[in-house]
Image (cartoon, rainbow, N blue to C red):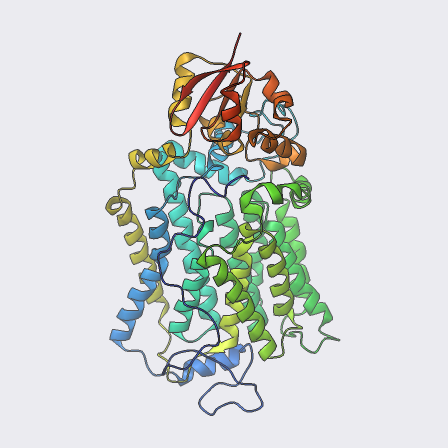
Length: 541
């Protein structure tokens, strides 16, 4: 089984107490409560499912004026909310990831050749085979950061993206929800639930851009204001150059278009934004995705990845939620809570209902996609639950900006306070990667063909320089190649007949794997180096 990440705990980085999300109780003024059915609402509560812009304005109008003390307190809370997830990432292993290495090497290749690759040049068995670097822009970013700052640059990428995602989710929630306390709680829950995704991968761009898309769509549908739809093609033009999951964003936009088209016959459909505007935004966004070095061929890559079912059983991050950590159960509660909110307001047959179903299918199919259901569920809950009329008024935009600046300063200071430097980060890497083994191989001049473990392929591409037998690019190796490698490293009965192992002159792998134990007694190989992390074997002459 291929582990999720690289030696890090999957349970998410936040050592906080998780609050169960059942029916929200009344604890006093300003605290959220689920609405009763519209037929008989209490006098002091708002009366509307999935509150409209007009009703949201009425809520703001009914709140008590915000005082200077309120501004200061809320600004501090927001700064902590924005900075907290990024700081916890820095406290963990924010630069320690198995796949970041081949991403960086691809970025270096692009910088060296001033072009993007169309064929593979890092793999032994698949050298020269078609391969598209569909995250090429992300790879350029991390390659330059690594050149400038080393591993600190990778940690800085993770921290900056996580902080930006926190701000984006809060903005999404705050535009749907007038109650500050509830907005903070929902944002915190969303960030906690996707905490194990906070690794230096291109999917951080996808999470951010997906949140922005949902924010724009929810606001346009609620208010009928169309100006923000013009940002969608810009978002998708960037998205198609940093991560392949822009396709998920297009499918969500397609759901909005379908609802607008069905508005004539579907009473539950929104009618504030017509199909012409949404359809135009969808077409413009599709054309914007073609503004990448590979053009329409990125869609072929997306299809290949989506239909590669074998990887779902081999790569842990692609498997279904295991429900072994608190964040998994928070995802479940968010899903049930948002479905219950839609059912309470008789809105299951709506865009939100279709969006929730789409998100649940993707997220429960693969734990790597939990950010989809987290974002959608939080948006639904924010629009379906309201605070009391005596809640504190909304902060001015300047206070939010100030909170963002304070959060940036806090995260920057955390690099010093938490001793996030290249030496410490290199120690973290050496606990999971064959750092010393690679140095020995270079010192002794061992040559390939190389046979290696799946998780270490990316690191070896970046640091050893020999063509690898396999690495994290699952679409290059396919189900058959991954199955063969996993079977061999697990020591299954036909391990000795693996063609790549038979032809290998150099083998490197985790010291406790079954294959390493078998090679200790195999007359074809002799042990050349071993430490607590890795073992190196060379073929006998």
